[in-house]
Image (cartoon, rainbow, N blue to C red; front, side, top):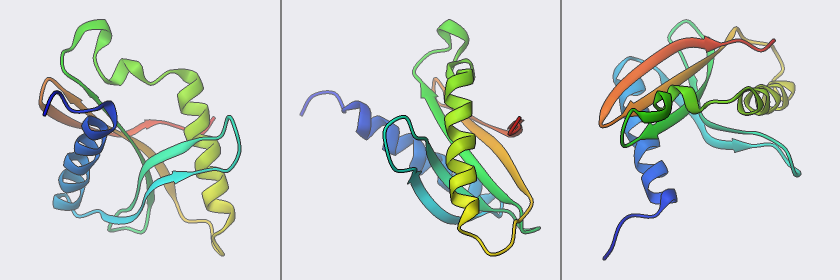
Length: 121
């Protein structure tokens, strides 16, 4: 069969992150939310915490921890695109909920959930 594609590997990481967050009590709102047009952003998972907070989750996986690991791969440009996509998503809601940006990193098989990993500024 060969090695899995990058998309298959990414989907598997998102599946694992989703299970981890659901086991912690978060509820899935939507997956792979994209803004229209070129240069837009994508949010891997949009979850709702028990207190009603909308949680925008970026999932990053790396086989090893070289080059700073998975968390270090989220550049300022990537963060801006996630924030752009979150703002686009929130504009559709009738009431602005509390929000935060989390990251789930999977480095060499170990999973770590970084709550409030960055902000919208």
